[in-house]
Amino acid sequence: MVNILLIEDNPLITHALKEGLQDEGYDVTVAKTIEEGKALLDKHPFDMLLLDLLLPDGDGSNLLRDLRQDSDMPVIIISAKQSDVDKAVNLGIGADDYVTKPVSIVELIARIKSVLRRSGFNPEAYRKWVTLKHLKINLKTRQVLMDESPINLTSKEYDLLTLFMKHPNNIFTKAQIYEHIWHDYYYGQHNIINVHIRRLRQKIERDPKKPEIVETVWGVGYRLGVKIFE
Image (cartoon, rainbow, N blue to C red; front, side, top):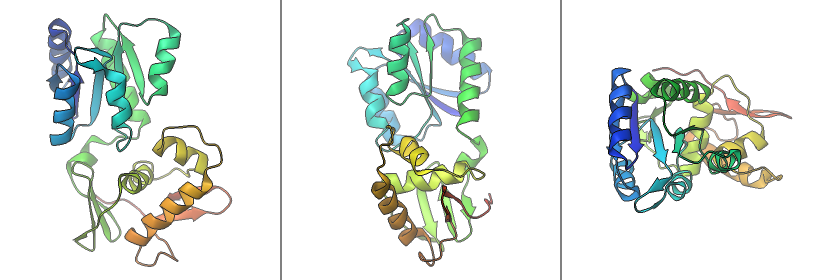
């Protein structure tokens, strides 16, 4: 079951969306303010965030910017704003999609499925340990074990590892990696990526000089070098 956090202060909207999504088989938790949402995000792992922008204690886009510092959780904006400019801005701060009010539950469910599919999300993988050769990764708790011993990855290192893991058939260029992990346009910041890849390999590879997990595709970029087992 996919766990969704809905941050919305309108009780009529939250009731309708929660019932509609639960009928579709989703597990929905509701927060009415940014602070409530932050507290829930700190304590519980969620698979997706549905976020209203106009909340009693502030602008939801600020919460999204903070979230994007260390998480690639799929986010769908719920907004009463209609203009294409507003929608473009909303997507530009790290949202994966948007719906406008009044919200059609049919449209919302379709967009949820589409976003999860595009992100390569596998709900079952978020319920168990995933094995990559000598590594074990728990996408619910963000724990990483190497030969059964815990290792400490920074948020960016973890995001790099799971980016490759969630898209095992993809080769990522440095520009694509930067845009996925740093959520910004790539202006040739290859040294940042080189440093993070090197540090990640030092922590997860048995021999960082002969990497098996994060593989270099010369002249193109990087990809996952091993098969995934669950």
